[in-house]
Length: 464
Ligand code: C5P
Figure: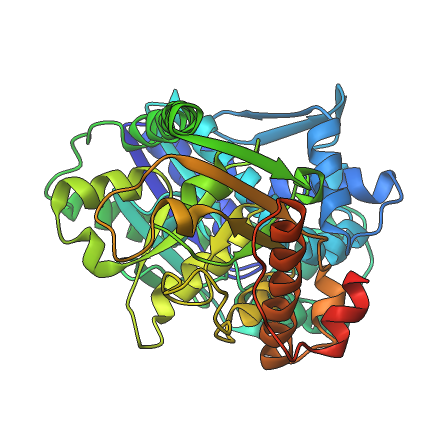
């Protein structure tokens, strides 16, 4: 990462780009205009005639087109598939459509990652946007947030457009800026907010040069602008290391399962190839998270009660294999947010909504609540049945005994279907559905089945 990162965030036409460019020139830094990146993706999507509300298509355009972002002390130049689009992305119709791209959590995640990569080999960088100090570079040495009155911002944007030959009227511009302010500040991911530790400057009555003088004055006052060790490199290594560690851990678990259990999987094709999904499983033993994840290509995130993190080593181990601590018996908003964020970023999360391990092998009623997570993140739910784990490791035993275990991934419930059910109906439906799967699974294996009457008509109907 750059040794010195300075972030400048603020609403549309608050003067960020001009000021950031001038500041970069003055201090000999590179200048990154992150708005240009959102504009470039918008242009590519518009040109490809994509449905801008379809996040999967937007991600695809990001993957399929070759974006090249070059930065120096005065500008961020952009080409798509070898074609320079630095000017074209400034057209008003592209500006109007950036909303869709900027609201997509997956696109944002990718662009933020690219911004960090761009910063890695720069000695100094001034980066401007909406979320630079809050999300992309929370460790930045200095953060600024520029504002200006709506009238002044509309005046600046009008002049800028006239210079480029576009004729617009001031009321239209004002309305467009207001709409952008609203969508930039109101979105769930990377919203426009002044970072907590930012210096806020109202530029309404200041020229760009005056603002730059103020920024330089602030920079000089910073006692230590000497360079921190490269946080972003550490982060990149952590991300890569995390993936390798998860892979190693899964192989260790596979070996355990190979030697200790006869483990069979059914329905793994029901796991989406990409995009977020919520696995909802019955809970029979401590090893259930392993049984759910060990046979899948996709990585899973898990939840575990926070007391398990009390032991430092075990807590570290759990965290290192994607486990999020959750407070038991109360609404833990921070973990709820983390889970929604993971799902929204296209990850899989595994939950055991019974809340505790089975006392007799049978499935207890699921607690409602997980429906909210799936609905908020707009992801599918995959029911999972584990059978045999209770016989291998019932809750009254201290250690497991080898045995035969079956893991069945049931038919996916799509995000749109979830909207038609209340959380309680969904919990009831999935409890019953897994009970039916369990009975069928046990009968097929020649085991004694459980008596689960009565079951809901919907669950029986679907399974017949
Ligand atoms: O700054 P500029 O007007 O070029 O940005 C275009 C759009 O890109 C903004 O309206 C905003 O929605 C989005 N954007 C963003 N995050 C950034 C930079 C820009 O969401 N870091």
